[in-house]
Length: 253
Image (cartoon, rainbow, N blue to C red; front, side):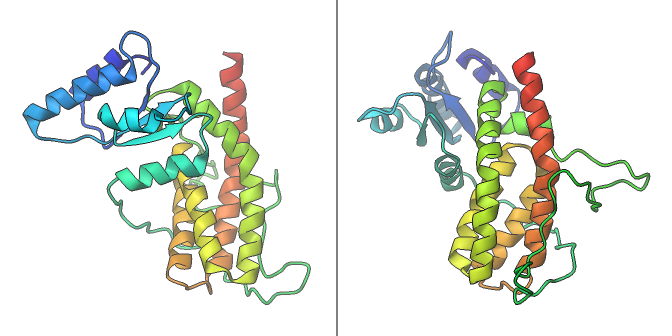
C-alpha cells in the first residue's frame, strides 16, 4: 500500500494484527490515516497497534507520533533490532515452534578446527526436510509473506533485505562465538535479532530455527544448541541467494 487511503481500504476489507505505517505518504499521510483509524475505533471499541516509520529523527518526533495515536515509533534508516524490539513490544505472543533440530547433536567440546559447531558451506546444496518427495526444493523466501510484514511496501522490503544480507554473516559469526563461550544471554540476544530479521523477509523455516535457538538460550539449555545452530545456518545458506536474487530483480524492475 502506497497511500493512507489505500491502507484504510485494506483495513476495511480484513483484520490486521498490526500496521507499520510510513508517516510520509501521498494523498493521506500517516498522521491523517492514524486519526481516521482511531476515530473509527472510538465507535468499535477496538484498538489496532500502529507503528510509525519515519525518515525524521528529530527531537520531539517520537512524542509527536505518540500524541497522534501511534503506539510506537521507529526512525529511518531502519535498524533491525529497533524495529523488532518495537514489534515485539506491541505484538501479541505467537505459538511456540514445532521444529526440531534436524542435524545430529554435536558436542561443543569438539576438535579445535570445528569448535563443535557444524557450518554449511555457502553455495553448497544442502538436503533438508523442506525438500519435497520428488527432490524439488521449496523456496526459502516467500515474497507474499514478506510483503505482508511490510504492509505491501516493496521499497521497505528491499531495504530490509539489504540490511539482512549485510548483517547476517556478522550475526552468525557472533552467534557461533557465543555458543563456544556458552554465553546463553548473548545467544538469546542474537537469535532474537535473527528471528525478527528472517520473519520480515518471509522465511518461515529460518524463523522457526532461530526461535528454537532463542528458546533454548532463554531456558539456559544449550546442550542441543549446536544442532539448532546448524539447522539455522543451513536455512540461511539457502535464504541469502534467494533474497539477493529478489533484490536484484526489484532493482531492475
